[in-house]
Length: 441
Image (tube, one colour):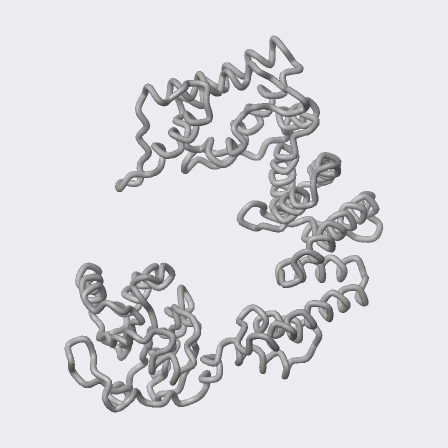
């Protein structure tokens, strides 16, 4: 392993993942090598308008120990004091200052001197502009600080200046990140909605949105099936007052999805897309029609759910029927061991079960797994107390066909009379709905 190579950085990321106790323990020698590696990148400064710091430093600096961060912070401060034009030192300090340690809140700074300095000293770095937009936008939007309104705008203007000469795919990647809520607290369109027509920045923000619109329009030409872009473009047109343009985008997407359906009758993307399009166009009946085609299980809400096939048995080979559960509030849970979201929901179901079982709540699991032994082992390991049915046919099995299950988890919550309350009873909604039914007994 070379101390100045990217291999060292990759090795550090691999070995700094959380262990079984949720802690990160990285060998001292690796920490020291990473410190030397980052110092070298800081010393290298800026070349061709960029630094050679790891491109994902922002994402992973939280894995540095306090000691690593303190040593590197002090080093970068000393470098910047001796050489005020060192953009790498300024960028590291901007990232380190504003990225929190595990469990420690980020203080709201009155200004962001290192961030501003880094944007000036690293003139081709898109990443630092994106980071600035993320940070300034968060404080402006969440804390309603007018001081940051200009900073947020400047950071995104600089971002566009730096992606202007990049290839279209690179442009699209950065602009999409501006609307990725796992990356940013608020999108440019969210901010634009807060402005009034007399806002001093309205013209500049309008210009920014037009640039975003242009990037997405080019991307939509390449990927006409991309529903996320359709939604964003429609929203941008709407806030800019271009209602005809918004409808045009939706109509164009409608044509694309209808052609997909001609080729594949049950194309899920096309059905979901058409449902959303007609909802936005105000065609409620058509929207509902496509929603039901995309997810037939929705049609059972407020309906009496038919009984299981007569020959149905549980994992213990005992006959089981929905009729046996009349008078109880029942969760009919379609799931599988291989389904991550299904497994992730089980602790929540157990919590609701333990709280309300003695008051008339029960659960029936219908597993779409093929291997019975795997299901039995999982149930034993997780101490799942409710009865289970195995339908190894999965989405082509009897249960999926009878109840219109197209995806899992599919939690059908059924009232005491056998009527379906919801087919989306997950997370906190499950507890709320069960509590309402139990208390209304």
